[in-house]
Length: 302
Length: 302
Image 1 (cartoon, helix red, strand yellow):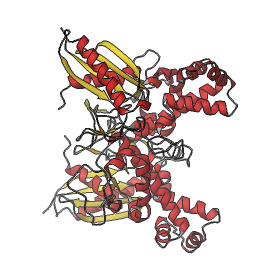
Image 2 (image 1 turned 90 degrees about the vertical axis):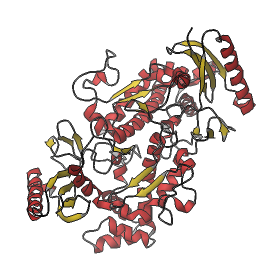
Image 3 (image 1 turned 60 degrees about the vertical axis):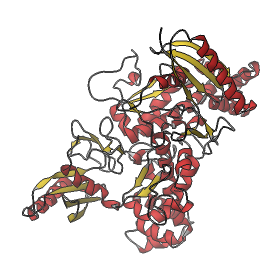
Image 4 (image 1 turned 45 degrees about the vertical axis):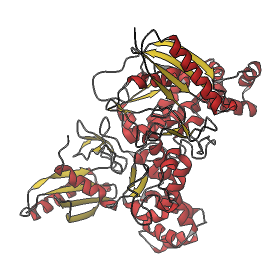
């Protein structure tokens, strides 16, 4: 008998619902497509059905502690209203259960989650890296997520194909109806120059964003998560290149060996000696938001 | 009889030394040019002479509590060594008395100064706003300070003059051997289009930087200080324009009236109602660093 909670990760593409026990172990995960086109009520209905099904299934396993929902948008923590959600058209001004920090970002200061004044801290995806860059759904141009998201990888691949300079990407796109970021990644690790350039842009955008955070806040660790983190090998060298150029603080506190940026060859972080700035990828990959949402009902906030 | 402290603001252009009493009132301020070309020892000698003179003069007024020095560079708080100082060539690896946060930036979280892992937090001036922008002394390109400093205003004015499209600026530069940012500001408030454009770039760079900070940390107040803040009227409209475009968080929490961004027409900030993000200028102007340095010996850190 173990208590459990339910986490929901409501993304623009996927709707995922998981039951997680008190030890943080996954009991069951359900993944549905987010059928945004069918409207808000339909999506909420599907979400509630899945929550009900999981709750009924594990009723005898333990007590349901609560349900946490992560949504991609701006939430007013006081009223619980979703104010803006560029990736969920039609959801503005909807009341939602709240994760507290924007999906895609979170800040831990001195061991506690930093929510910001209105619980909106952590919108790293909408920090500007190219003032005149591609238009973003949020109204800005050149946001990090216009370079460092799976959607952006596919968009950049289509741009490269349209320019006529990416034959391997064109073949991959033609032969695969579900041409996605993973297909671009596969070409990049096989050495295709155009695919590599795309992950170069992913890494450079992240590098500029992280360099700005290092310069502003001088925190000890920066963790890159989400689906895109599974392409770490392809883009991380560009993160470190940008960091060394754009942050004297990083240059002064980077791990000593050029091979030991971030995780290092051994996967170990130096535990002694002068303070170091560590950049690494998240262990939970694309499930981080889901686990975080499930964790919420288990946590008593101070 | 009032105790006092001495603050030093060692900038790339000016060396300022002030005696400040326990109430924070200025007793006396000495401003010298920082004669970087004469070498580090010469500058330190001048600084020490001025400190000695002030200490002797106010010996009978009260007890000297200590001396605080602000320097423009990266300091290792553990060793007290100045690691990098782009605007003070030849000063790297020098031991200094430390202010703790880089000159030009500081962060207050929950009422306390946020120093960061190695005391380097607050290097907002070196956040990237244009990845391919002008080369900065720190090694990066397109840093905030390449747009939003007095030096940058003069550089942009000279670029405009060289392009042949800025006759009023050219006349001002010809007639004034000490052509400076204030001269550009005077033309801007008189309506000269090219001078206005320069302050537009100042404001846009600050706006991008502040929008990124709002998106990342969702803090309630952002204060713009330093010498450049005296041109607030010329550049602040561009800050707010960028903020509204580049930060949904700002758009959702901006002061309600379009006239009440920042200080508002009445100089009052709304004290009730929903949480608002306030952007304003520092009251102390270019003396903020000097007062901060003087404050340091008076403060017991937790």
